[in-house]
Image (tube, rainbow, N blue to C red; front, top):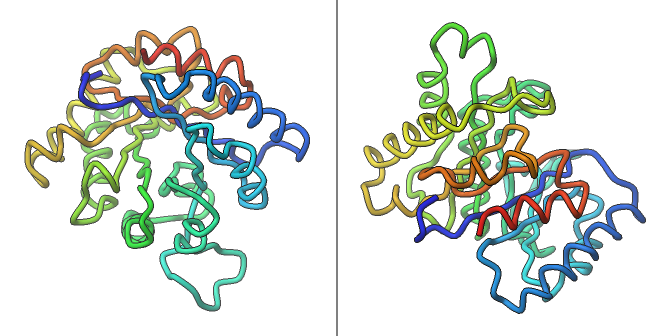
Length: 255
């Protein structure tokens, strides 16, 4: 991890947690973060389900933890039942929004173009988009991992991206929720390829400042090895983010 990029440890709670459970989790994390007195070597964000955003915003207020959402619509308003705009997410206190997660791409058939439009909407609303990219096990076995991921980066990342409005999360689909993890060398190679593509598109300065997170089953026991890599700038954490002790241990590994 480059010293000039502050690592981002973001928790994607997905469709998990009851009211009491996540309120306790958020309060625990807030106490730990506040106890750092602004001296944390990392940035932390939590991305709860939509109905919990306002409650979690209150629980983490003034702790230094950032609020994120798990998706947004590409339109600011309109007849889109069940969808939520980036504009509204910003109004309830979000700083980040995840777009293009593999579960959205698979379960909802989202295309690169749709992900790009969502990222543009997020950036227009003043949010930073966490754009997810990643290959399946079949694509990796066929030797197409890098080509697949770079194609997604090209199609999903909007023009005008900066380190302030864009984070990329590399999530090997075969490692999400399976317990499998890319080797440190595999992760570094992919992150380096992504950064090289960003250099070609946005210039060396911008590419060097954009954070690229690893999002494939990062846990307390492998976090240090992954976060020590030159081009891994944090993690997009799933299951481990639902346990305060595990999530905090991952964050501390980013020091």
